[in-house]
Image (cartoon, rainbow, N blue to C red; front, side, top):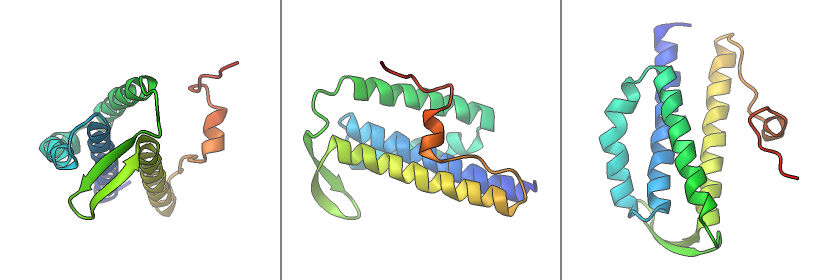
Length: 140
């Protein structure tokens, strides 16, 4: 794979991380403007990370998401979201989480398509496939 192609894919992964980081900060109580600023401040560092280190950052972010979600008593709790591009909107925690998941799905599909176009093996991104992976905790 050419360096240019790797950089494009890396940029998408960095974007995905930074957006998820920002949304988690918003879910945890920061204003959207504060969360955006936090992501912007982190952007240069994240974009320079080798893929292995970015993977570690994603694992850390995943742990933060799990901790946040595990303490929620009401996923339908309403929050006033002040989006600098779209304005005020009352939304629920569950809607915000759905947005994060949907955004991630969209960009994982982008990356899979990029890999396919480069004649590289793409990755399985189907959610049902994830159900059967070894990383899933199965509750009885």
